[in-house]
Length: 337
Image (cartoon, rainbow, N blue to C red; front, side, top):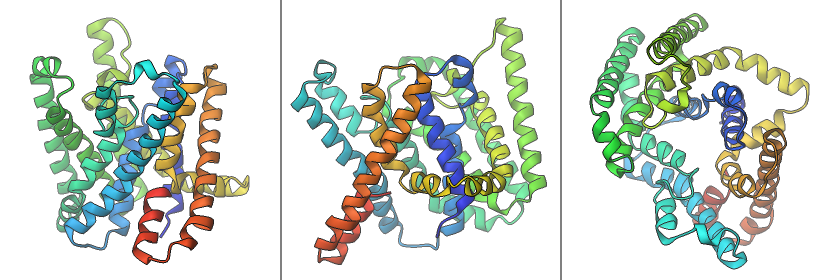
């Protein structure tokens, strides 16, 4: 089952992530700084609409194959190519390789996969809570309360965070709670009417503006939300969720316009194959040294073309030659999407 308006927003989110990696100017970098929360919000919405309930361990194994195995396959090709060609070989140590496979820092870029994996681990529980609590007001207040406790802990333990910025446990806890709240919000989002969506957008806009004015008055200068992304806190989330809810309101019209200008198939392909397009944009971003408005389309279109070739080879040539149904299904799961 596909949800076209959600696919369009996933296309927007992925495009904004690739734009960020293209190193645009500070203003553009800030304006697009809603990408990862938007993707998590959409994951919650899609999960809420499509999840039918299944054995938890079977579900986790399926998500592992969908999220982690493609990354490991790509990284094996990526590091092998570096070793064979010698390109940037001096910057790739065993620690970098290990941390990249572990979805830590490493070469960068892969931390977002850990966000989706961590959230996926608790998604069935959040789904159950969303179904159990029929009152939207109670559900949203509970989410806000959990988030405020999280935010309080972050700000009262700043020294601990500074001493252990690369702690796997701390990073995972902060990513899990922060983005878990965003995912839980996404679960409820398809049930909300436009008026409620706009009210939430207004709430997040007021929150963002309050943070913005506070930092201007206390520091004397503008602070960008990127500075509050690791770990993610209210200033970063409020802007991202405001943008996400506004995009949600206009998503039907935006998708209709994409159909009108005959871009819908292109957009849906990118949305359907987002993980591999994200992976393939990494070497392109690293290899292309041009101004951002040239680098960005090269990275996006180049990664899309490589993925299109990959999906075509897998579906038309590789899969038909695999007789075992389970193996064929797993190959499709890992090498497409």
